Amino acid sequence: MSDIEEMALELAFNDSDREAIYRAIHSRRDVRRQFTGEPIPEPVLERILEAAHHAPSVGFMQPWNFILVRDRLIREKVQHLAEEERQSFALTLPPERAQRFRSIKIEGILESSINIAVTCDSARAGPHVLGRHTIPETDRYSTCLAIANLWLAARAEGIGVGWVSFYRTEELRAILGIPTGIEPIAYLCVGPVTQFPTVPDLQAAGWEERRVLASLVFDDRWGTQSELFQAPTQ
Image (cartoon, rainbow, N blue to C red; front, side, top):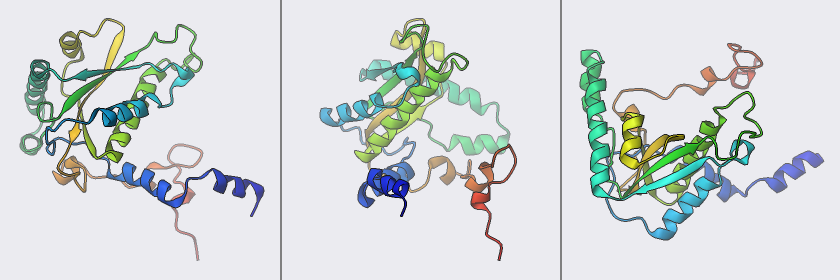
């Protein structure tokens, strides 16, 4: 075994810790139906938010904020936005697709224990953020990484998360009092659940299927199928 291989083994997690990471990734779900409404213990919520706060960020700018939405009236207003957009989207679909869509629950805003709005402050680290010189959108990408961390930490804690995307950003901004210059990135429903579905809801509903990884991986240039997934010749 080479020195590099030995170093990799030393740096790797042990088998059980590594398995736990992959288990959280593969069993994470976008939860809508299974919320119990029971409160999240404060230490658990703090750990989940701490995990989000330790996400990687370009230039270490940490552009995220988290609005913990507990107020029932505020949540009802957001739920109303989601329902309006649900109906609007349904009108754009072909009849068969629209019928299938009506059977899909799109949010758990009122059923979940808490809602968390995640925002992005593009000015957080000033005008000279390392890594944003040619790709200014990296502030949003960084915020999405925080959301991913939050989601995986929640799964490890047995807490469900659902991402709501049926609303107009400016209307959500007004409801939550988000100032100009701060961008709403995600509105999450969070809380204990009765179970985690074995497959994603949209897959179970026949809306989409998981794509085959081999069809998405190329070598060196777009469209060149990766040798990683090609069967060895005999």
